[in-house]
Length: 446
Image 1: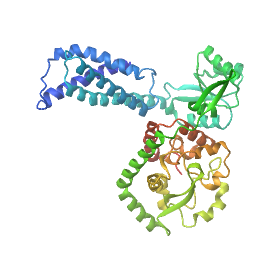
Image 2: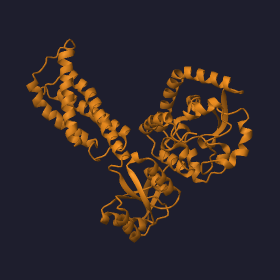
Image 3: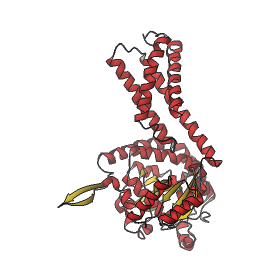
Image 4: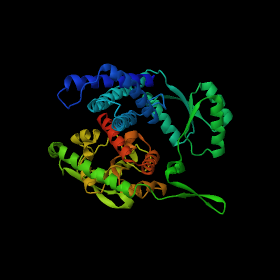
C-alpha cells in the first residue's frame, strides 16, 4: 500500500515540478520544455529508480511507522540520494534529457508530499490505537521494577499500540497457557533474572505459538557496540573497549553544543529579561539560583537556573526528604511547598533550566546528556550508576523525553547508559526534537 502511494506521489511531484518549471518559472535558465510525452516515458524509469532507492533505504521493511522523526529523516535521505543519482545519470548519459531545475523542484515537492503522507499515516494509526483498534495484546515476563514500569507505561499510553494483558513467569509451559488464555499477540521479556537457556526455550515456544517477542536488554546488551571477541589458546574472550564518545565524535558533539547554545542564548535574551523581572517582583531573593552539581568524571561545577523557590529552600530540604515521590537517589515531590508562584509556572515549562545554556556554552554541560546529579546523590550511587558520569551532563536527555519525573531512578540510569553507548549526532537532534512536545505538554514535569 505504501509502495503504491509513494509511486503516485513521486509522479505527482514531478508533474507539479514540470508545471512550476515551465509555466511559472519560464524566465529562469535556457532550458527548453520537453513535451509531456517525453516525460511520460522517462517517468516510468524515474519511478522505478526512486522506489528502488527507497527500498534500499529501508522504507518498506516495516509496515508500521513507529517513530515519525526517524521516518521523516529516512524520507529526506532517500529522496536526496535518489535526486543526486538522477543528476548523475543526466551528467553521464546525455541522451537522457531532463530539466535539472525540474529535478530540484521535484526534490522539495516530493519531500513535502511524502512527509505529509507519512505523517497522516502515523497520526491515523495513533488515532486508531486510542480507539482500541489494532492494539497488540502483550504479556510481560517478569515482576521486578523494570517489568512494572513497562506495564505502567503501556497501560497509560494507548498510542504506543500495546495493551498489557498480564504478567507471566519464566516457565515455558505457563507461558504457553497464558498465551492461549489471554489471546496474546506478543511477549516482552522484561526480567534480567532469566537464564540464557530459559530465554532460548521461551523464544522457541513463542515461535511455535506464532507470536512476536521482544527482550528488554541487560547491561551487557547495552554495551554490545563496544564488545570485541578475541581468541587466546583456542578460548574465546570478550573485550570491552573504551567508551565510544571520544575523539572526533566528542569534537562533533562539542561543536554542535557551542553553535546551538550561542544561537539560543541570542534568541532567548528577551525571554530571559522578562522572567528575571517576574522573579524579582514575585519574591525576595536573587534572579539566578546556582547549585553544586557533579559533572563529567565527578568534577563539581555550578549549575545555573532561574530561581523558582523561596530564598531559604535548601534549609527546608531535610524536613521534606521523606516525602520524595521518586524511587532511588533523587528528591522530587509534586506539591513542593518551597516553590514560588512564578516558580510553579517556569518549572512547569522547564523555563527555569534555560540559564544552563550558559553552562553548555562554556563547556560544563551539553545540550543532551545525563542530568547532572547532586553530590549527596552520587554518594549513594552503586558502582554501575557512576557510569552516567563518564560524559558531560546535559540539559535534556533520553530519560527526560521518556517520562521525565515519572521514571524510577534505575530506569533513568539504564536510559543514560544506552545513550552513552549508542551516541550519534542524529540521536541528539532527535532527543532535542522530542523535548519540545514533552515540555509544551508538561509531561511528567514537577
